Length: 295
Image 1: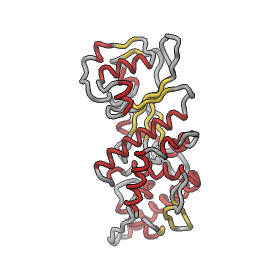
Image 2: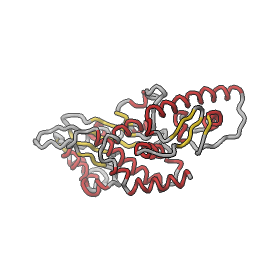
Image 3: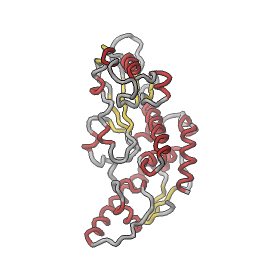
Image 4: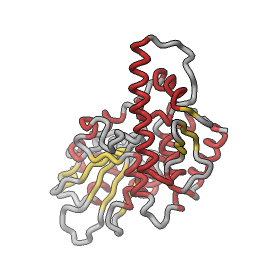
């Protein structure tokens, strides 16, 4: 996409399978079909709503928005800030189905890494944040790849009142119990209870609301008894916002704390060590691939 005028963007909205608020995640393709009067009226209203959302994003993200809106046109920014580069990655993660299978796998892993990084910025400095996903480095080096052992270690880290080892041993050794991110403050007093966050990464375009209850404290209650309930968080790469800044649909964000694109950027950009992400091999590989894709 090099340049889209507001008038020509109407065809994208009508042909799109996604919500209008995700216009800047669409390929610039025209359907070429003529609309009847009713369809045209709908598309005009939808386009007006879309443009308000894009203008909101332009104002809210500022220099970290990787697009330039000039009047009734939008185009990719010529230069990107570090935040703009992160935004572009999250944008790609919200449209993973548009890319190859290998890219989807690698970028989903990168999304988990960025989710853990952003969570770390919102927790006490001494807090430990790890990725519990079965294919993560943390599972291999800390929790172990055997889920039965990993859950026992997790229970100890959570300062559980009771770890039900017999139940842990009943489950299949592979998998991650639908838990992706763990953030824990390591109290060293030997008592039960701690500051803890359990997170789920949902790098999906439309199905993410159904995943927001996975890996919640309630689903893990079979394995250990906690004296305090950890906060449950769901990370999504979408900007799930209206032009007012409110949620597109508040019923989709219940039962969990949703960290969407804007919140993830806000947290990540607080860090003084953002180079951990920007200079990592996986992020460099992403940028090389995406530059070829959009060239």
